[in-house]
Length: 45
Image (cartoon, rainbow, N blue to C red; front, side, top):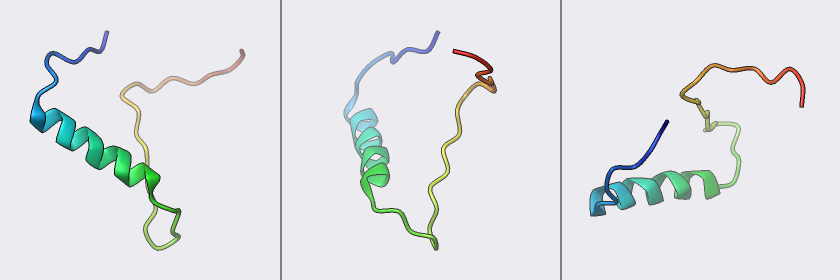
């Protein structure tokens, strides 16, 4: 199970940097790649 131990100022700062990155418009020259922590494949609903 994944959990956050403590919401520190440093954690919030880094979290907002990631959220700002995802808000940017898509650009071919600068792609955004997401990597999940687990490799699972959804085969059916």
